[in-house]
Length: 229
Image (cartoon, rainbow, N blue to C red):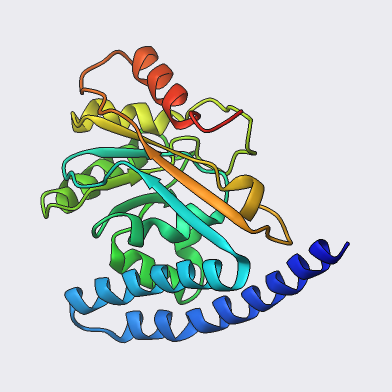
């Protein structure tokens, strides 16, 4: 009972301090005229989230593997908002594919667009895929890694969901290898009252480009669920 009460109090304090503290980062990012300074602000915001999670929630990270490649498509498991917020700290100036609806959030959407978040419009078909591909190639040419959540939305821990068609399309048209990343953030973070503990990342072996759709989807699905029971 005491543990549950403590988790509730810690979560409330986290919500207040993290989201209130995020406002200056968003405002600074929007106002920044320097691309380099903008990316620094974004990375610092992500690190601020890590500090809040560690100090206020008792959540620590265990990262196995490294994210050192450009011209690679990182396919990341998505269980909670944790990894979505953590991406700028986990990767070096990543280009992130995210739901287009997120770019419509006042203030944050402007900052995300400037950072290099590519909006994914699931129902727009080939036109949307071509737009994503153009943006991906342009930003990847700057040496920035590409990051996608291939399931398209948060999936409960221990559950497997088919990968969205956009992932296979990007994989085929970009011609990049894939590095799958498993995450087990759900049990600790995807809940109203967060729990203390350790969130693990596991970077899998590089999967080569040019594989048939069924094979690449099967291999990625298996790898990103490596931390599921």
